[in-house]
Length: 274
Image 1 (spheres, one colour):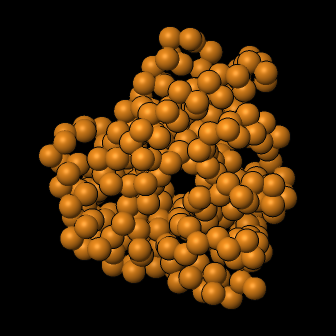
Image 2: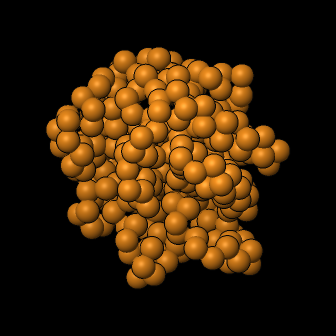
Image 3: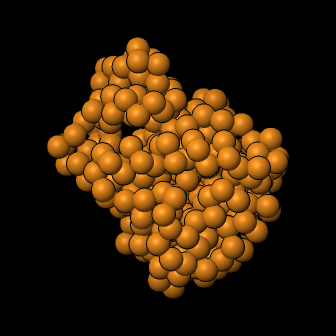
């Protein structure tokens, strides 16, 4: 198991330029993490020299880059926009490769008002399939998340509830598509994350260790203090021989202290999981 972090609590600071990507890399290293995750929105300008410098900085301090969180909206009702989303995601795959990360987190898209279930699933499967070809060519693994709502989105994820997520995933069983399993997102709809994990365990490549205060609501809290059954999930992962990335989704908005508490908690919970 290797430990990374997706720094949701720092998003606004990084999006606004108050903190840099380099600031995040150095902070991640100071936390004793093996890796760091990024949001695609960290890179509004994709100057190759800048991206190479970021990659080299990670290598210099011995920090791997785990995944780039992307927000493709393959379920957009406008066909032209869906085409643009596919091309943008292909560009995001190239960004992932340039940074030296192995995984690109993907979504189905937003639950736009009026989108028919069958139609939305068809659009999501088509978009993912087209991007998978480009990812395979570049050696990048796409990881599809049981997601809630993306940072730049207006609507919740079309993949909710989990039966839609599973139908999309199973429609792509012939592809290299893997799963980014989130430990708490199922709880937002009061679904059982344990049941979902048992269903997709063989395709999990990245785990987002995330927590919410109570099922049925989307109120983020410090990892380990809410409703997410983290230790039970870790036990299942260990029983199945999981040795991939655990990426802490730190979204408690408690400053650096949130990260400093979450990292040792997750390490301890993994060690204690039976």
